[in-house]
Image 1 (cartoon, one colour):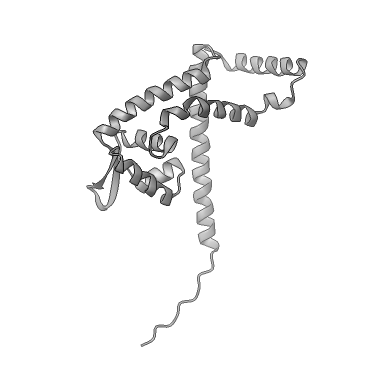
Image 2 (spheres, helix red, strand yellow; image 1 turned 30 degrees about the vertical axis):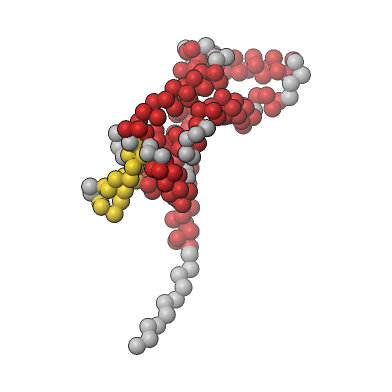
Length: 190
């Protein structure tokens, strides 16, 4: 597995190689690199979810719904960064396809937990194999140890970025609430 020092040295060597070959500095830019890898991943995986309601979002919902802890519709929407209204439509489509169910929460009957059906579990297994094959195509140029390291680092980075995004979004809502002007109440007519 590559150490941090080896990774930094490899990155510096790559930057020098790019400069010597006349490549633009963009080749070493994080945003450019993320975009290229993301587009490559989308291209390699687009066929996997062709007929799945919601496409990649449907897969993410199904993957969470198949987990041990069933989430509510609102929790799913927040977890995946999907608008609650859009989440309703996605769940309607997944439910109509027989992939998920909305089950009453035993602790609060007003809340529905999203759970994968047996058919959804079977479909998820096939989808997961397809995504794993697509991921391997995207990461094929990396040695096996580097693939594992890349996955770990990306997961760590994504988790922290998502937590920061969620925290900042919540802080923004709270700030907006605190500064909102409350309209005066109208007097009730008797």
